Image (cartoon, rainbow, N blue to C red; front, top):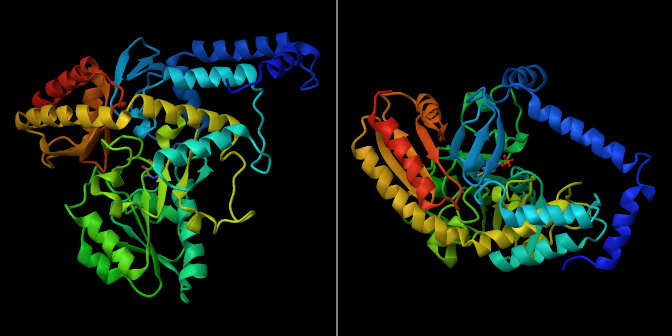
Length: 449
Ligand SMILES: Cc1ncc(COP(=O)(O)O)c(C=O)c1O
């Protein structure tokens, strides 16, 4: 038990209304919450879309006008009564499937018994302590720095690398970090410049200096880019948003050798590839221990799909360059997020997500290749574990058109970079449900679009 039952009794008594926590009595609060909840559930689809378009920024285009109101495992349920297979898993945030029972149980326990505080990290909390112990035990790093959304992980990694560059490597010029074409590290200003696409980059200049872009997968270009001010290489071991791009055999080991010889830090952004997605706990493990990155960025399903939780892992020698006051965040590592992440890590381990992903991924690759051999639209199928990209022929319908057809038939599969469809279902999806999705893919890819 994580909580003291005697304390719980006191907390529950105070919640019954004798509390100084607010002037609102519990009945009034519950009635107000119920009213809001029912209002949300009874909104008609047209109204939901109208309100989204009227009151929220238009930085996403909607795949459907039928709101999703419930989810379970690999299934999404819409307002109109449709059941849709989730082949995206919120970009791998739902590797555990929607509403994993262990994570849900933790949230319920936490809310029922813990009266979760928002503390700020200057006050000690048992759940961030347990999260730190568990995540370092699972990954083999000394230390974890919790953040909120995934983009804060590469941001923190860049700050840490710069500190190391100034204070340990002692570069005298502007410290340089090498990154790659087709990469994706999120949307804050520093990493936005790394997106090649004008839609993502245009109009947001000027950008932070000190970043050098080179082609992904070309070791000679990497060698050429290194100079006396280079401090780090920032890379996704498999590019997700860029189109499920897998580097050539031997590239990552060569990159690590070069980094060692040139005294550079290697930062892996495994926000998307982590937690079993590629058939190992982390994608770096496919290349062996010599390819263990100095800084590992994690996120997505660390949250169990519930609240933004991400962070970086490193050994003490490096992480201790962050001293009190040098980095932080109000909600990063807050008690409820830490409890959720702790539950997610246990679920990832107990469900053996890497093992499931390796086994079912091999089956999926075989079956999707069979579909490709009978389709006029597919150029190549590539992937690792359950991270699969379907590259389309450029003389046929583009990714968006096919994503729409797949949705009509009952599954979500999202286009990325126009000509690639990303198929990344929850890793817990069983064979019956995977075969259902494969059936839809076969129908769409071998039919007329
Ligand atoms: C590799 C990688 N890094 C960082 C991010 C940013 O994560 P978030 O959207 O949670 O900020 C993403 C998001 O897709 C990602 O794929």
